[in-house]
Length: 337
Image (cartoon, rainbow, N blue to C red; front, top):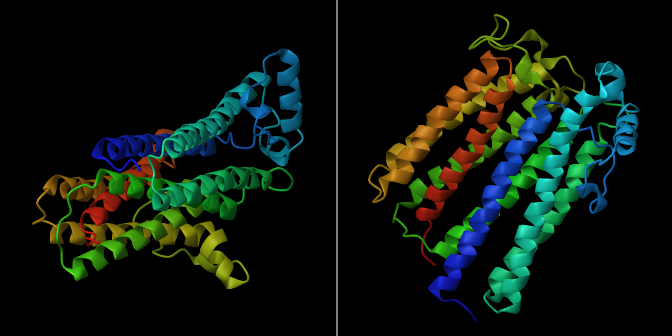
C-alpha cells in the first residue's frame, strides 16, 4: 500500500486540481446563468453532446429546437442565429468542462487504485465522491429540463440543488486533499471549533438563499440598501399562498433573507477570526477575515449594479473562496485522531 509522503502529496495535488476545475465550473455556471444561456441546448447527450454543431445544418437544427421552448417564444423571439451561437457557447462550455472534470477525476483514481496507492478507507471515500459527480451530471439535466416546457428559466429549487451538490463535492474533495497533505494543526478550545462550525452553517444558509435570489432574478429588483423601496421589509414579502412558499418563491422575501443573512454571517465569521488571532499560522486567518469583508462589498455591489454580470460573477466566486478559506481554518483546528 503506497502511503509514503510522496504518494500522499501526489494524491493531494490531483484532488486540488479537481477542486480548481470545480471552482472554474462554478464560475462558468454563473456566467451561463447570468447570460441566460442555460436553456440553449435542449437535449442531454452525455457522449455525443461533447461536440458542438459543426456545420450550418447542425446549427439550424439546434436553433430550431431552442425556438420551440418558452424562453425563446416569450423573451427572445427576435434573437438571430449569431446571437444564439453566443449563448450556446457558454452552455456547451459549461457542459464540456463538467465532462473534463469527470475524466480528470476518474482516470487518475483508477490508476491509483491499480497501483495500490490508495488505502481502502480513502478508496471508498473517493468512490463515493465519484458517484456524487455522476449524480451531479443528472441533476444538471434535471435542472435544465425544468425550463423547457412551461417556464422561461430553470426552477430555483433545482438550481439550488445543482449548486448545492457542486459545493458538496468541492468541499469533500478539498477536505480530502487537506487530509492527504496532513497540514499542521492548531490546538484550540472546543468552543472555538463549535464557533467555526456555526460559521460554516450560516455561510451555507447564506449561499443557499443566494441561489434562490439568483434563480428568481431577485437581485435585479429592490436595488437600494439598506431599505427596499423605502421599507425595511417590503409589504410584498408575504403575498404568496401557502405562506411558506414566500421563503423560496417570493423575490422580495428571498432577497430580504439573503441581504440580512450575509452581514450576520460576516459578523460571526469576523468574531471567529478574532478568536483565532493567536493561531500560529495567522495568514490563513487574516485571509479568511479579509475575504468576509470583500464578499460583503461584492454583495452590495451586485445589488446596487442590478446584478451586472461581471460583478455578480465575482460575488459567486467570492462566496466559494470564502467557503474554501473557512474549510482550511476548520481543518487546521480539527482535533487529532
